[in-house]
Each structure stands twice: as structure tokens, then as C-alpha cells.
Image 1 (cartoon, rainbow, N blue to C red):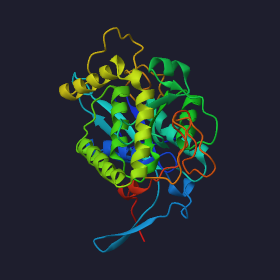
Image 2 (image 1 turned 90 degrees about the horizontal axis):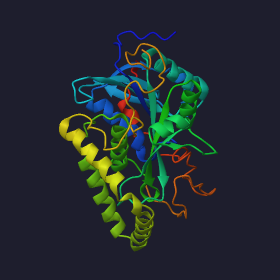
Image 3 (image 1 turned 180 degrees about the vertical axis):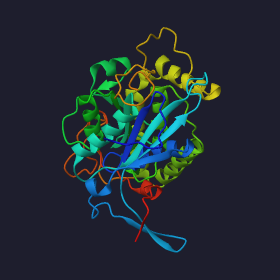
Length: 367
């Protein structure tokens, strides 16, 4: 039995999770959850026992000084809760349960069961797991973000792709499947990070994930300085690419391929989504549905999921590479000498370079 002392009754809670490591290229996903924690002043209410899930020779503890006293930060996964005020433009709040940590080294099934235990006790209506993969996408174009689910009904309702991936997976894929088997609606959102500039941070990919999350949950995310950071990041990569004619030529070939493939997208649907996002940020809440849009829209509306039960009040319960790949789709398999790994569905299974966000997590013990 999980005891949650000091956690209030939550309103229509949705769990949003990200994990550093294989599924976090450019630290884009974990940085997105860290952004939500920071902007909404998330309060940590639980941390998983690091001894149970992490190999400390792989994810080493960090020693640091606090006013001369030595402290240790252990690698772990923490859960926090944030309340989004006026999430629907009518003054009604909504809660998010944020899960941020490192992909565990062992006992993945127990890890997922523990996370699901918290989801059940908190009455989580849906779980959204964020990930980032390395792909053949130019840094000069909008970052592709794909939504995937294993639930055919949820795929249809939220206008997502149904995962058809087969191959190696990471904790994002395992957690999503665990949620599905437990009857908890689960979605993963995947950002494609240019493989030739994969080192973190990648604020442009982080921004793209947050925009997609806004669309999915119909809420307004305060972006702070992130848009300016994303523009500065792109300018910096532009300057680096301009210094190397081979890289510049390669980027141009990616741009041509991308523009040809996505020409039909530069039409009504893409424009409508961008306009809806503008309205949410202007008005401080979600806009009205698009003309002709019925109840099966591409967003998660309150009470529309089966949920995990528990205490919630809602109806749900209470950098650059030496080689180049010829692939252009996110489901492409990389070769044995390519360190990009495999993409699950449109997203899972890419080794990232995550790790910078660990400094933000402090489980303090005297040395």
C-alpha cells in the first residue's frame, strides 16, 4: 500500500513522465518535464528507492558541498505534483503528476509497477511519456513530434499513430505497455532530434514536445525563455554548418527531402493547430474546437479516459555523426555501426545523451 501523506486530492490528474538515457536524445524529453516542474513550481512528494533500480557504477552518485557540508545526490526517479490554474479558460484547475528520472538499470517490471501504483492511488486518468530519438531531420525545419499508443481506440480518439514497432525498446516503451495492460490510457510523444547535432541541450526539440503536449491536453504551458533559447540554438547550429561545406550540403539535402515529403502538410490542418495554440496562449486557456470537430478530437478531454482509479476527483478515479543514414522515417532501423539505435513505433529506442538534468535532483544524505 502506497501512503501519500501531504498530497491533496487531485483534479483530473494526468501523469507526464520522461527518463534520461536511451530514450532522451539531446536531453529533450527530460528537459521538457524539468521545465514544467520549474514553471509550475512542482512539489516532490515521492522518490523511488535508488537501491532497487540503479547500478551505481553506471549511474554514479554525485558528491557536492552545501555550505561546507558534503552531500550526496543519488540517481533516482522523483514524482512531483503541479496544479495548472485556469486550465480550461473558465477558472477550473487541473493537476499534473510529473515523473522525472533516469532509465533504470534493472528490475524494469517492478519499476513500472511502482510507478503505476502511484498512478492508481492518485487517480491518474492518462499517462503521457515523453521521448526523443535521433533522426534524419534538418535542424532548420520544425521538429517532428509523433504521438503513439498501443490502444486502437485511443489512437482513433486522439488522432495518434498505433505502434507497430518490433525490436529493442527502452523504459518508455515498457512503461507504455505496462499502462496498457493495466487498463490505464497511455500515450508516448516522440521528438526527432537531428543526428548530426545530438549533444544536449536541444531547446528546439524540448519546445516542440511541450507544444504537442499542449495540443494533447488542451492546456496552456508557460514557455518562459524557451522560444528564445530555441532560436539561439538554431542560429548557433546554422553558424557551425556554414563553416563546413560538406555539412551544409548534407543539411540542404535533408531540407529538400523533408519539404518534398511534407508538402501536403502545409495546409489547413497544420495551420489550424498553430492557430489553436495561439488562441490558448492569448486567452490563457484552450480555444474552442475547430469547425466540424466532433467529440473524437485530437486532444484528451477530462473524464474521457478509463483512468487508474484512486484518489483523483475526475471520472478516471477518483550532436553530429560520422556516418549518414539513408533513412528518412522515424521507424527506420540503423545499422550495426550506427549508434542511434532503433526507433520504436515512431519513437522509442534511441540512445540519447541524457544526464544533465541529474543535477536538479537532490536526495541529500550525509557522506
